[in-house]
Image (cartoon, rainbow, N blue to C red; front, side):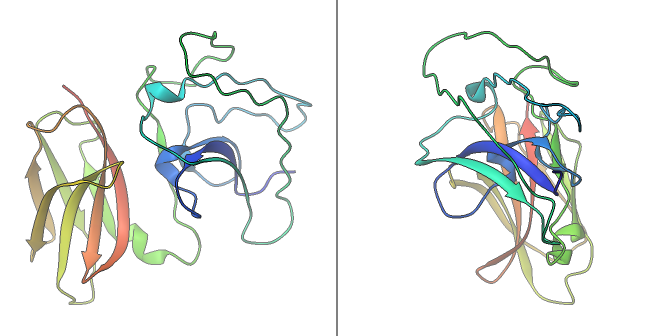
Length: 196
């Protein structure tokens, strides 16, 4: 039965990550949405997801996500899960939109994470520069970091304006995270895709 997020992905810690989770079903727009096409009333659906087209790295966990903060209505069943490390094993469902390797992201915050709505990143995808627009930080000093999905910081800046522009033309193509931080706490995260 439908909850907020039903999906599958890889991770390396005890928390689910939107940029590493493929949402297959759910009422909340969160995670990589390219395969979010399960329909209520379907019995079983088959997915073949070329994970390496979306992200790479070392991961220690295969995760199944079934989340509903309200309580009930979050049942998911998975079966016959196979993980391949080699070439093409055939794509049985086409992307809803977009091109292979370019994730369609949803980043609707969890109900208790209201501060995550205070930052926008545009354009996305981008090739040479991105703008980071910050809403209210309640007068707290903050910084912005551009981090790759392995956690390496590529750009960092103390911020005192509501909109900052970052030159990204020297970054390699791929998926990056923008972190809004106060002190050592990350209070908001957004993803963007760096193109050639």
